[in-house]
Length: 103
Length: 161
Length: 361
Image (cartoon, rainbow over all chains, first blue to last red; front, side, top):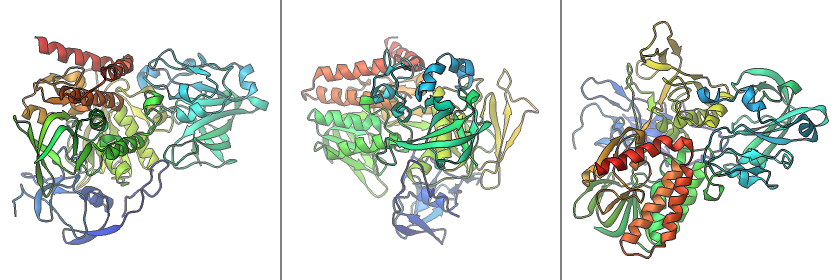
């Protein structure tokens, strides 16, 4: 399922290079210029982490680095904001399920 | 109602409506801008200086006799609140600024909608132009519909079938 | 350590204009933004802007952002530090900026803080379920990254942000179920914005609130109800909306963390969006080396943010001893007050008056 906008009356979304990121062991197609959050949501993945004590699913809320709804483990580093982190080839992304430990 | 949902009533519209005599001569711009928004691109866009404004924060005044119906102001209005109306040659036409994907083609039949998006008639697309025609990201499409005469003050939107 | 005359924090309309006027006055400027790209929230606005035709009105927001960014990038006195967030400010005018991999120390004689605002949240059942998003987040995903986070949307809040989002969603091909507001009338949107959305068939449902959203791992349904005079939901008026995103456009609050760290006095001014750094019309705060412009100083809009940025940049440069034409400052101030002559600015003006009044108490 792709949620990428194909046509728009005003905006232009130039096709950028496709790259691969690895989400929970699964390869996903992302576009250069994506943030981790936009790439995951484009692939239909809305649950970005679990809440710390009740383990409820959490998704994107502000998308501009102000809240902490999208903290994920990115390239092994926990508490990384998926919404302001650009994707790169081969990047590993995991849902964060606890408060996060530094590697 | 304007102060409830921002939509003008027919009374609001008719308070500032061109005469039949003027409409028969051809297209004329009519605005539905009732708030003191600090904004003036319509004034600057008019090649014949038919639109005036006391100051930045007063609504525009269109001189229907000076207006040539060119449509520059329709495309320039950030609020998409200016329309062109005409009764020339016995045909009632309204020009609507349109920024959606689904641009209709000339000759197509569409549903004419009122200010709440309710279908009030069938309409024929008489003309489609893009102004200013620079690049895709700057322009606004102007769609002209032929509609029943009595609905000239009513139809302000459309839907493709 | 990076040394600079003026550090501008935030690359939106306020910050880019502040960087430009300070640089034009001869100051060395460092513009820092946590995003990889300049533009702030202008980049997600597809509508043509209101204001003066000779100051960018009639140009779409994202095109304004491009024009300003091009000027910033072309100016020899401006360096940009993108992808870095200023996370610390210290009494000796040094600052710490961090990126994901790295951090850098900055020594700036003056700082102009234009950090903007964050979106507010409201209470309802399961409001933490994925699919409940800030309206700005939907705009960012859709208009910056070209990604639609759902198919059918319910928008909560009928201020400009809410109705503009409805319009942008229609442009991107999504379905907008409704725009709701708990108030008995339009919640502050320009009438023309509200009218253009309604004539495309989007219902505006007033006196209505969200009771909750339901779904297993994502919003599948939202339930709303009418409210009575006491704002309590009225039983029997529930509506079930089959939507997968509920976008909250229930207001913004200034981001003031840095001001507090820098010992700037903040005041609670509801008309300006909550806690704001006390500031005068030139952008001075209670810390002589710290200035403010844009939504960080009170929620308003992009044109006033731009003007405020231009003023603060000139004032910071002037106070560092660079030659600044006083007429330019006065011209921007006059533009700001003529823009605010509109009755739509009444609330903001009351808030500003209260903020300034509080300082004398």
